[in-house]
Image (cartoon, rainbow, N blue to C red; front, side, top):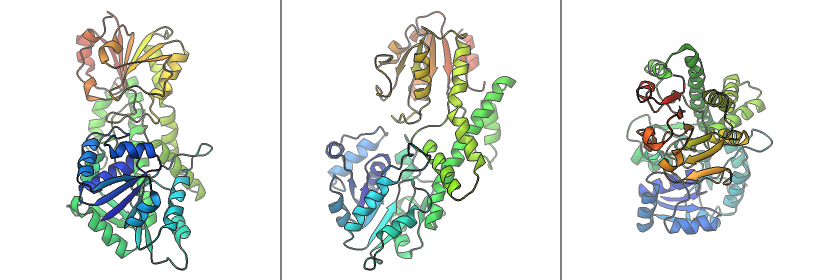
Length: 431
């Protein structure tokens, strides 16, 4: 099939590359000419394990192309996937759809034959209706179908998630469009029930509802972990105990610093905004947002307690600063709240991050080290912020030459008992 992915960010680049790997002819389009130039050389703008190899292989096989010519790419293709950003508006919690509608205007100008227009970007319910209305004229009613096909890709696991999906959701009432999409996804939906055909609005809603529920699970176990600390109960035991119930499930029940990234914060806020328009109260989702937004305050209180309320001039090292392992994404990472506060209070903050130095911090005040040993040297407090594999078996006594130092493990990577046996003052989440 001839496919055009408009928007070569995370979703468009991963999905487009995987479609090419399945044997389709794919053009990934972006208005950033520098990005396109680099992609044609096999240089990718994001950190995603395995993606670079797939891009290089499909470029050589000539199944994958990158272009900044949107109009030409639309005309050449049969399926147009919209994969542009839908960020939260600065003055409200609504999703900003300006990039989506810019793409739609361009598609309208280049409808030279029947095309299936697919929204893969996360868009509020009824966006498909608006797209349909914009595109429809007296002469082109039969030249297109607008469908919703939300993505469910986890950063750091995106290729696996695409190739071995829990489900593929396609929202359309068009039999023609549904047959084309089912054929497109047929190589990766070998088990029955993995392909779900719904109405367009239902498909748009499924994405938001799924993310809101997962965000709620994370926030729930974080709040439970706070109580566990008061009760002298290990939150890991609680997570296993309730996660073993098939009605609940163990995934997303790991206590930590809170959710972040490109999806959960944005999508939960957008869902609440939609609920207000339809005069429906989503009190649980609102509470989830509030709790997660304030999670960093609890962590700061704990950091102060660990340092006996003496944080000025203390050397604090962060191991990892991205919102989770497997990605270079800094969006809504808790480190963006913790580090500036500690700096403001006079702490000397440094960090080591496997994906490299970050422009999110003032380089004159926050020090980056390109290896763990230098970062940890002489630290008063080590904060394990991100659950990278290389942080899971560290010899802290060799890393830090101070006789007395402390560790605050926000990911519960280590055993409190083993740390105690090594005479290390160790603190974790909900234990």
